[in-house]
Figure 1 (cartoon, rainbow, N blue to C red):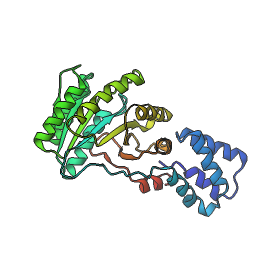
Figure 2 (cartoon, rainbow, N blue to C red):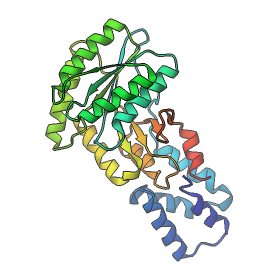
Figure 3 (tube, rainbow, N blue to C red):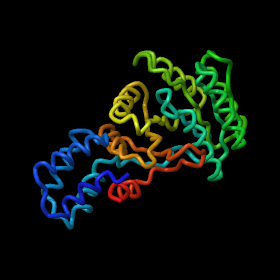
Figure 4 (cartoon, helix red, strand yellow):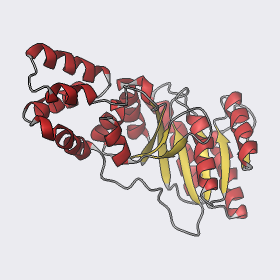
Length: 278
């Protein structure tokens, strides 16, 4: 990722010209960190001794990240329900499968619900992934009521006494009201039988500031508890992760780092920050 490598290298030269600062600023803005945060980094760098650059900037960035828990919430011994939400194309359905695989690999039982009934491909994709990891999927017919699928899935999860129920929701973003109605109905239906422990929003790291706009819409529409950031591997645009947490105060809980089902895991704040300089 190496978001701040050029900045630190420039500081170590001991002399940074106004033109250098302008170029560094432009490069940081291109990383999707956002203009306001870039200006704060530049001001911090200008007042920092070159030998303290990494620790000083690291400390600044750490203060911008969420201080909320990155661990999945829920009571032990009771099925925990996770809704995965996001705009189509962000890797929402794939992330649902990857999360299921991660939980299974860590000794949990999982049931999936294919509540993105408006896209037949989404249901088929989830069913294909589920076969690979030997997990059951509750699904409905194309264009059926997503809330009905969620309701059936909760009943099935209780019957099986699984540790986690993960619901892949529709990603159609017509209007805020449409989004609130569809997702809100799913939440209400689930809450008639159980609790919604997590609502994880999937964001594509390569969409930059548009990802931040998406986050704001979903946060307004439903009670998002955290994020899954996809396509964060080797991207100089990883600054959007900082921008999202600084703006929302909510934690990134998982990241997708590739196309394989194993390319997924918890967001490690210390590793991420270290990667910004390496």
